[in-house]
Amino acid sequence: MTENLTGAGFGRLEFRDPERIAALRKKISQLCRNVKKPISIMHVCGSHEQSIARFGLRSLLPPELNVIMGPGCPVCITDVPEVDEAIAIARQGAIVATFGDMFRVPGSCFSLEQVKAQGADVRVVYSPSEALKLALESKGEVVFFASGFETTAVATAAVVLANPPANFSVLSAHKYIPPVMEIVAEMPGTRVEGFLAAGHAATITGWGVFERFVSRHKIPVVTGGFEPLDVLAALAALVELVVAGEAAVENAYPRCCTKEGNLAAQKLLWEVFESEGGMWRGIAHVPNGNLRLRSRYRSFDSRQRFDLTPDLCQEDSLQPLTLECICGNIMAGIQSPKDCRLFGMECTPQSPVGACMVSAEGTCKIWHEYGGHLIIAE
Amino acid sequence: MCLGVPGKIMAVDGQCATVDFWGVKRQILLTVVDQEVKAGDYVLVHVGFAIKKIPQSEIAETLSFYDGLLKQGDRDLMASDVADEMKASS
Ligand code: SF4
Image (cartoon, each protein chain N blue to C red):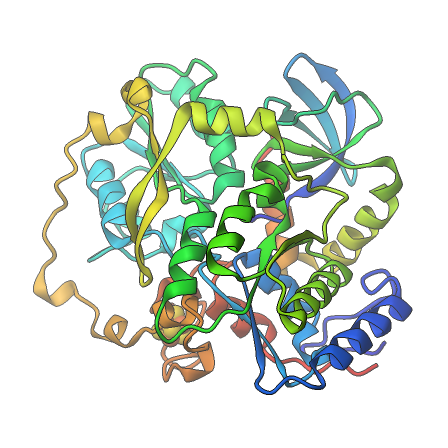
């Protein structure tokens, strides 16, 4: 292996087994040889996109196979009003603690970063338990503005169950992936013939969670890990199912993921949270797609504790460029960052226009960092 | 953010554990992991919580993948996600 186009080295360690890579690549090409129109596979995880882009995996795939990123970036699909709620809380004097990417994501007029510059107390944390610690050390209200899919929501649930002090609460923007797959599969303009499911979310929920989706939509689902070999193995399994016209769930990540998943974690998750319908930014209203605190934990629910009427935007603070952002279509698999006029021009990681350029899991940021179509010289 | 980071358990104290990430010692929580873990085991850690015990036979391969990533330093998106996961533990 030689260097790729960005200069990031491809050592033997990363592509540990070039023979297996070559074999999988050949298998995928052979399977795709006789297809009449390109096969379109969607994955729903920022870490998958990072791995695919970083290791230039698209360049190993035949032109008949399209791998697209769906709504797999929790920051990108956090709805504008959810950011506005966090901002309203921060402006009432509470400490708002949140993950780094959420800090910069735009609400309807501001981001948390901007209201911090105006004097609000907003802290970046790396873990829900760090937010809890802030509450233990502080006299005032501490709100954890929580984002992430089920894997992260489990950690928030564990903190809520750890007997937090009365000044701690959670503003949940947690989302649940299985329901959005149904929405995307039914969207006009989106063509998904197979889903690559995120290995670590499935480690929690178990791959069995996808059986209902598969029987309803007749679209195969394969769970996959994040190393280049894991991703290729999962794609090979998916293409095989698609070509055979077989709708089934397969587990290509057996070293972490089982059919039942982590039952202890599921118990924590559903003890604290329930799913309800809500908007995913740029995508649609997703029935059961939002994770909200159950009423028995209402005393730790920021939505019950604060006045969440957002401040109205000043006309001149609306950003005209955001109207051109096509993040929603990208996450629905209809367009790619290359279709956006602003990509790499007005919109860059240093000065992002849309949420998909803010988050390390957003397609635009990942493509900007790694390029969306690297060619690996072998 | 959903990648997680592998660490080696040094000591277990109830629901807490001391974990070694490439020489950096951190405290993590064991409330979420469903298997019993003890000193010497490797776990996958996400936002300060162990989510999965890594099977013995997979440890070398898993670590070598992360070794390769971390060599790129914080200019790399995946590597900086992994670095953030390490910061998530106290
Ligand atoms: S490049 Fe920027 S403006 Fe265009 S879709 Fe991506 S985030 Fe939105």
